[in-house]
Image (tube, rainbow, N blue to C red; front, side):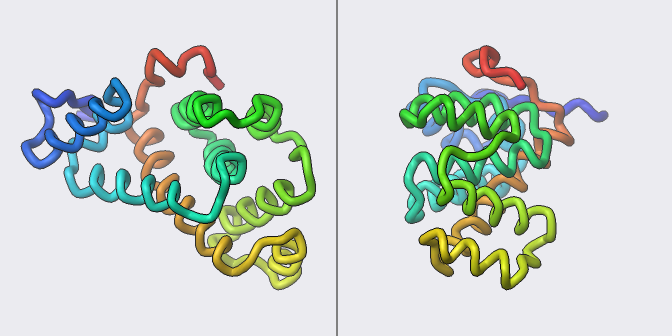
Length: 180
């Protein structure tokens, strides 16, 4: 029994139904990831809360996208990279930035490069970022708050990236044009 169910409001466990219904009302759809996460109401709830908390950080749409996509690409999430490409477009993020992230190219400016470098270090080193890397991050205009906010974004992405790997979540129709 390795195939994960992609739930709808009708098939989801009772404690997930309202969250799926709310998502559908807000976005016009239930992303396949949410349908998979619905199997565990607590996990779906945590993911949604982490997502909102990350949106509420000090990062602007470009910076949110850098953190999300840097983690998605590093974790080779073939569901999240297309989904966050679509999300970046809806947030009016420059498509050149999105393409640079998808293709592991240099960031368009030093501040975003510092953000990507710090994010990659935190991911690759399981939080053991060096003093020199932190100093470079701070020199680019960031502070301790943003270090913690990267960790928040990473927490969200661990749930989605790992779930998509385990469940082999199919990319939603709306994001297929951004396949990666």
